[in-house]
Length: 124
Image 1: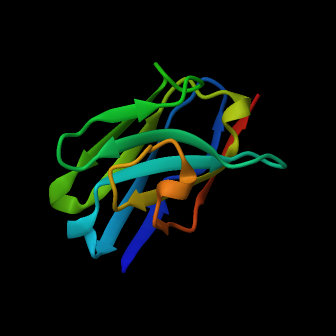
Image 2: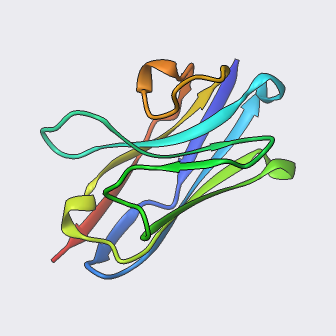
């Protein structure tokens, strides 16, 4: 059983930056990749970014390319999401998720464990 704990959310002005962290514990040896998803108020959850543990391959939603960077620290079992040039439309609850299989990382159905989420609010 994998446990995921996010941190780093908060309130920031447009144009600012935040760094989210997701610490994984439990059965992490079987994990293939980690992803970040977000759910804006009143909207569906959407893919933000993903990264594989071994090769470090990264994947991004078009809406965040060039502004967000996903990275991982294998020694700490932690994945980060550096968010720069934040916009009000980035406001959402951000959740990290763990995938045990080599499947499409942009599809939330391919993730097996989820964190509780952390709120990010970008003011204009």
